[in-house]
Image (cartoon, rainbow, N blue to C red; front, side):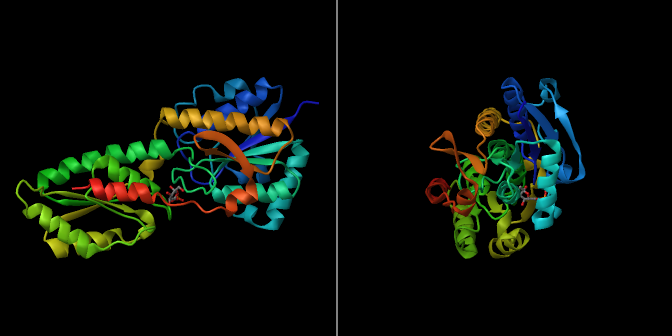
Length: 322
Ligand code: F6P
């Protein structure tokens, strides 16, 4: 009998999820398996919202943002009864495994379902790059490029008005997007949860820079959303420096758009590897990137790891800032 696997996207969408879905579907079909596309994350599994995929089901999606399978955060699946119902649905459907593309919340569901006897493989898909056991998550590169493009535009108007632009970028509790984007846009300061910040020092630097010979009169401050203080930071800097400030929250625009080459290729490699694992009957794994190569790790072990912050890059930012 043919092996049959499911694929779903769960949690916040990320550019490149489509490339991963495509790789899972095409690889599995090429290997003689059947593929069930499950819609809206675990909700689709619980509510019977799925369809048989063919190679043509994923035609033309590699360059599209979002996810063709739709996505959701499923509260029912957090409860043991939800997981049990999910297992029963998998058995009714004859699924030999599921590929779950999402963030760590989605992986906890995959771990529970694996423990209940359904082999699951997690593929990291989130713009935040905050999954512990992988150097890279699908969507991160596209989000970095989108944020950079948007902030470059903000720089133009901040410069014209001699203003301070305080920009909030996404990342949930993590400052990976903030630090990298701050380097890329040549910001004057970056504020994240991971490192202490000193607004007096930032204000003093702004005043010194503005008053210096050939000094600049406009400023870009990148703030990670996890800090939760963007409005207050802008107000305080304006009060301390007298420089007019404006807040921009980039928001969900960072989650959209056509994925970059990096996101498309890594998503394809990860999707391919996930199917190889399920083909061998291996479940309860997260596919990740380690030393630039795709690898896999036990789900619980991967979730229990702690991701180090990019302290070296943070220091490079401040040493190369104005
Ligand atoms: O995890 C991706 C992310 O975009 C975070 O950066 C952000 O904190 C969160 O999702 C926003 O979630 P929602 O789309 O539910 O508002």
